Length: 523
Image (cartoon, rainbow, N blue to C red; front, top):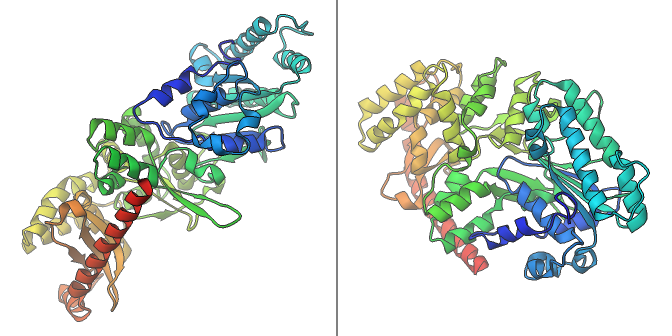
């Protein structure tokens, strides 16, 4: 057993011993299907702290033939799969973290040389009986080992894209790195499975990718791996029951990454939560910003303040709770090549700052935790009126509760005057401004736009969540270039108040039913 060849199972044992461990072992059934097939090249890209490294550790422990790990998997979901016994501890495993090698070197060339030398050293120590044709050539050494053992390799590469994040401007280094991976992995009989994880999808150059043999599973196209990275809603629900935490509040804080797995028998929709945030919230018994602490808001600020036409408008609209249209097709899968605002927004999807809806082609800010990161970034930028409106939203909401019409009118008027980034010429822009002015309302309410009331649609409705039933429900009717009395007449004529009472009763009954079903499922 070497450092990188057949690395053992210590890391995965540590995961199993943790206070909170969510069983994602069914991922192994998917990788077993790919073994020694044309689909044996898999690249998974997810934001930081979404369980990518833990999954790689699990795969290493499962496939590594140097130790029997039956005891680790016998009580996990994978043990019931028909492929479980057939592939358990049957392969030589190479597991490397590219960030580790990058951190120990000064250049990309030095990084790759170190990687090759260390792997070759492991091979020579483990297979000392083999006479290698060329001890300095990694590819030839692996061919010689495979010829001797007849056992192909499972190659696990974590943080594969770190060079693209650290060497953002060095295109030549990036190309050489991709060329190395292609020469090492592509069309090699000694590869049973090549599994890479990172934040970014595989970089494209020209009309094709240097690593076009990989099937990619990303935040914009997760495929059938959607539920294996991040916590699902059902998993978070069980944790909330175990740790006596309010699920609806946890959902407001951490839900929002909506992924769709396309299957033969129909699409499967997943609401994915950040594992880092959920685990910290459960163990500390306190909802708060935890995923954000792994990187400062400066990283987000760099991108949202770029000089791209329409970018600021889109960010402000999303901060107000809207979704905006996006074209993800022009993104170059790096952190420097941006032709349009859509390329910037697509990068933010992969970094975890936005969620992508593949059905309607829109992006939005996923949850309260991430939204706070935008507020932090914008507070240090020269976006006139935006942060002032957010900071004033608490006072505006209190004025609304106090039914102080003059104070509410003054607050809304102030927001209209101050938010100069948006162009106000329709009800949509007005709605965006109102949502931003009432930003703090998200602490207490579920905000619904275009709520059907039976005789029409109320523009904005604030429905108090279960922990805040002492707060009044609110109907906001928007009119552009029309009188306030006209809006009030419409509210009375269409009986929005009565309709809202019925809708709230139905809303809470549905929540009660869903909660009971969820608890029965968890039990």
